[in-house]
Image (cartoon, rainbow, N blue to C red; front, side):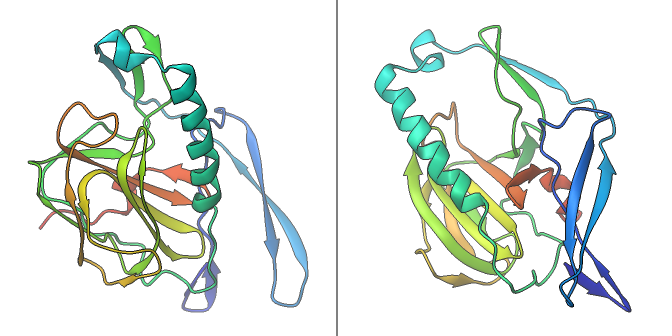
Length: 220
């Protein structure tokens, strides 16, 4: 929620899994306790497809790897629903790394011909060791290593706005640490299930992945 002049504005994330033409319900609670419902109709959006060919042993998970992934998925889902009362300082994010933007949000990936989940963020191709900075002021709520994401940092910017930085070579923040916008938090790497050095950057609103490009400032 943000106050603009005499009005309050709310921004919600629409999950990629939402079907075109469907209607989503948003619950609004006013300061006096009154509750209202608002309906949002999901529009149509086409995303590009990306076809990748990788060794079969990297494409399919073993039983142990699948169990690890499920544990991590549940843990990450809880973190992505973090909600703190303070409003974000801004909704205009700075680019977290210098490099060429690849792997656009929402693209449907096909691994060795098999469809996979849509891409939940955008990729920034950059040499290993490239600085990774906070896209906005926030607080680190996770700094850990995951099977797919590798070395990962998650920042809470307030009221359900979360940013995620993955495949890092190094992390330079600790859980609970407050960071300023554009401050160093890590370095680009190729950890986890990455085929080369790049930053996977994702933004979530109330647990739903949204296109970071919508919020990123234009490069100077």
